[in-house]
Image (cartoon, rainbow, N blue to C red; front, side):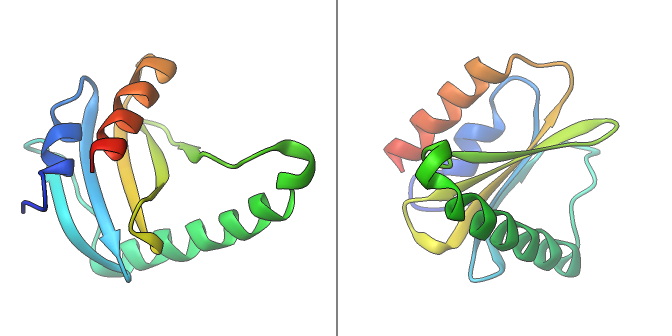
Length: 118
């Protein structure tokens, strides 16, 4: 599925990225996954969205002494999930599934660049 400028296509080609989803209002509006990667069902994606909103509410409550919240990293057995805000606003997020091992700072730099261009 393609979007405005292929945000998911661009991020999906990055090293170690297994899948990427652009979610707006709880619906996947753009995605890219490597062959053989399991993708979340609509119900599972709804749960990720709810999790993201809970984490954001807690993180933003602490920005006064911790600084601005940038992204969320969830570590699992085989991969990590990175969740980002997007320029589209509160009801939009970018979910990136990454296969370990990977170099976090370099990947974050690439993803942030793609989001800036979006």
